[in-house]
Image 1: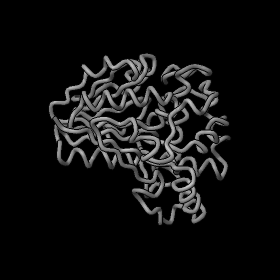
Image 2: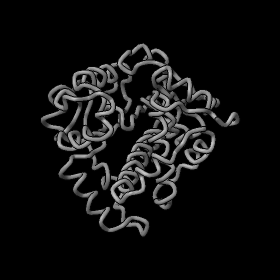
Image 3: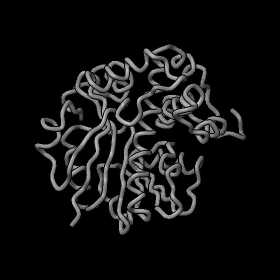
Length: 282
């Protein structure tokens, strides 16, 4: 154990923070012209953890495409946050299920307020590794316990986002949470990534199964807004854009042509998308 670094225990909740962090670091290395997260690289250097197993799993062709997916998700969400801040510079920027992600801080315009929310054990690790700066607050709680609503100062508006979070939520819980947010944060915006049922089944064979999820039908997935979102949505407008190509065309030298083909399949056939909810103002 390196006493100068933060030790991450294997087979614990702490370990679940490492994989997305490593993916963001990998994105920065192999897709530098479309994604950069130098803070992820810095955090990696602060951890006492054997990354050799993850490095082996992430060295393949499809794993590199997975890293590109992470890059696109983070840039898509950051785009939506920055767009909202243009008209609401003093808004609350709320990172739901934040882990060690620093997208909120990366979008800081100098006047917004940033909130990072995750389970208490996760926030304890985050607070140790990333001490909250001015205008930043870390909140430890279960997202489904809406007591965290009262911690958010949304007097200047609110833009809420989640990366790779709602795949783990049952559909009824997402529906209830979104509709409650619409009432709590009028004039606000919520954005997060989703996928269709087939994609969710594919995920089940890999990382979702590790979370103990067995019955895919119960978990949140979206094939179309008309069938899967609009029937239950209240006090908000919903829209979506392709996860991979909805915000960028990926015609960049660092992206292999075959990855662009896979991106089209992901967006069209697998319904990988960014959902956006614009909450009605009072």
